[in-house]
Length: 265
Image (cartoon, rainbow, N blue to C red):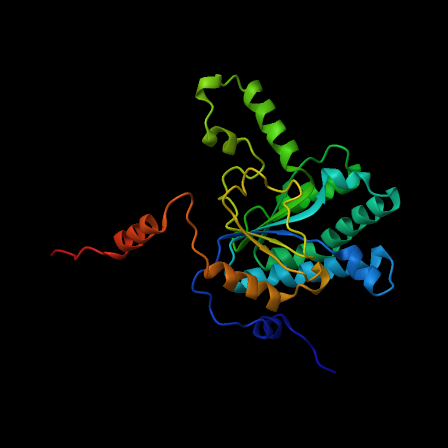
């Protein structure tokens, strides 16, 4: 019998070091239901397999040098799904916290919740809050769990809190809004990955993702393993981010930062 240790798992993930790893990767984990249907299984089997894959991707993110990862776990629109499926998703989240929290903590993962806990069953809401508190000092990877989250809802909440704070309209800037978002204090995602072949953001980080690179794949989430994740990061490293500038301006910026002044003694 082969015993898989944490060290052997890390070795199995080993890939050439990325020359240009994104600091912040966000993932829309799509396709669990279709993965299950393709295999003649109930949707619940797809959600459970998707959860198993999340374990692999979180640990791969640590291995590949990603500093922040944001996952779209449950949207504000998902409440419209059949009640039985919604309850299953809630149970899966609770199970993940119970089963994975200690190991994630030992791996140096800091868990943050983005979204609203209002409307979430009390025991689950407490467990989410406790997981965030328990891991708050970890720094190896920040894992934002977007649960009961919607991008438009986030912006509405930000505006409401800005009004409550009494900030004058003429004093509101992009920086002001950033400070009142759930992701306050974190950089915007460099890369947003969506699995299952869809090409839309589906109300996910619509403010923060304004200049994110988008990577889509036909692969369903349960099959999007560490190797596929690595390929997405390599693809990101080959892109040129312009942020509204021309190629000539980008080249000038690269040249400017490449010139290191000689030290004087």
